[in-house]
Structure formats: structure tokens, C-alpha cells
Length: 251
View 1 (cartoon, rainbow, N blue to C red):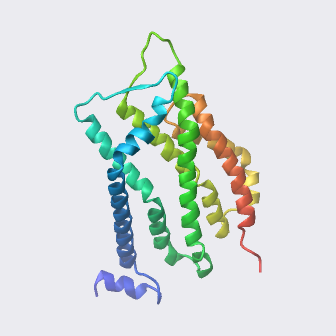
View 2 (tube, rainbow, N blue to C red; view 1 turned 180 degrees about the vertical axis):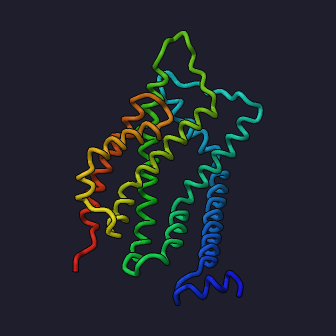
């Protein structure tokens, strides 16, 4: 008897075997990758708009404007590919979330599976909300601080790859931390998380949030860290309310 047959024999009727789980994971990854490729193609079509009117705009709106320079012969080529890949991931976020939850679905109870569509939609909205907050609040504030700080004897000529690394890091970090309410909703529905637990360890959470703000913010200035830390604290309080209304009903 082969190893595959042995595993199938030990599986309960209706349950997926180990190799079937691997096959399911492989197809979910392929479908997620197809979404990233499709998103990257869309990004490539509108790359000039994305670069000039979106990603470069925060640098030009500072006082004084930040001057971006390319230091490598192939710098802009690599930069364009990085932006296309990052935008491909961002554009396909709903599909990525959907593939993740569809892979998890067989392990959920029937009463829990009905929340998958809602979780995918609101997870995507939370992530996009984090990107929006970072772009319109965090980035202008941080870049304005960088442009005005220091002596006028030193010119702020910023390497364009470092600038884009900063912009993308801040936006992705904000997108991830804005998922806190959805994580709270899901864990509360499973009965793992309770509002009582979150209130009890609120002080510990504040310390962890401030540490996370320092780690996730690529710049060392306190302004950028607070701009991420304060929304995190607000999201934590919102998550307590979400947990309260998401608790499984007692029968």
C-alpha cells in the first residue's frame, strides 16, 4: 500500500487527505498568482499615471519640494518593475484574501463558512483604508518633516529607490495594521477572542502597539510612529466593540 493510500485510509469520510490539502494549496497559490499577474498588467498599462501623478506627488507637494535622483544606470527600470509588482499585489488583494479563506473553508463549521464573503469584502476595504490613510495623512506629514528638518547648508537630494521604498513600506504597513478589526471579528466568531480579554490586557496592548508602530514605520522620527500608533490604538478600541457584537450567541 502506498503512502498516499495509507493517508487516505486514515482520513475520516468526507475529509481531505494530507496530499489533497497540498493539492488544494497549490491551486489556491496558482489562482492568487494569476490575480497578481492580472493586477500587474493593469498597473503596467497605467504605470506613467501611477508613477507621476500618484507615487511621486507627495514628494512634489512638500515645502520645499524633495528632489529625487536616480543613482544607477538601471535604477528606473528596476524601480518600474518593483512598482508594477507591488501594484499587482495591491490590485489583487480581494482575490488573495478570497483564495486564503477558500483554503481555510474546509476546516470551518457550516455556520462559520457563511461569513467568508463578508470577511473578504471588509478585509479588502480595511486594507485599502489603511493605504488611503497612509497616502493622505502619514506620507505628507512625514515627508514635510523630512523636507524642513536640518540645516539649509545640506541639500535634500533623495535617491529615488529609497523614496519609493519608504512610500511603499509606509502604505503596506498601514494596510496590514488596519486589518485589526477584521481579525478581531473572525477570532470572536470562533470564540477565541472576547471583549473581556481585550479590556483586561488593554495596557499590555498599548505597549505592544507602540512597539509595532516603531518597527513597522521605516523612519525613526516620532511623528511617523505616532501617526501609525494613534490609529492603531483607535482600531484596538473599535476591535473591542466588534468583538462584543461578534460573540457567538449562547444557546
